[in-house]
Image 1 (cartoon, rainbow, N blue to C red):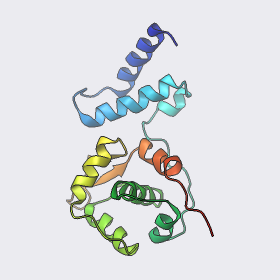
Image 2 (image 1 turned 90 degrees about the vertical axis):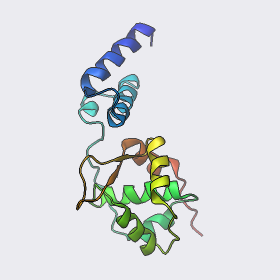
Image 3 (image 1 turned 60 degrees about the vertical axis):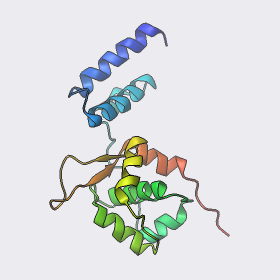
Length: 159
């Protein structure tokens, strides 16, 4: 792909995303759309930054889901919890719900969820939701976060 083609795709991504270029959410959306354009995925995949919810069978409890993943850090665990919540119909997740998930999985909670959420945001796995959930801040997983859980976290080996 030559420089002119890349410039054209950058302009196309700007037009598709719109918004304030200084807004962090706009920047994330721009990055996702540009990646989609540069990898020449079909334009139908660009209608939304986040793809349609894929029907994922998650009949298991959160503790079972987390046990299937090789999770070593709080960041990995938080992204996996947001993935689970999203795919079980709970698009927005509060800190209280993160704490409940840790408790259900019988895992020690981090001292400060906000620090780990900030790291998840910097990595592009999570965004703060525009809407609040019950007057509380909420977070949601990004497409990058979903890909990380699906392909970046190794599954544990079965005995």
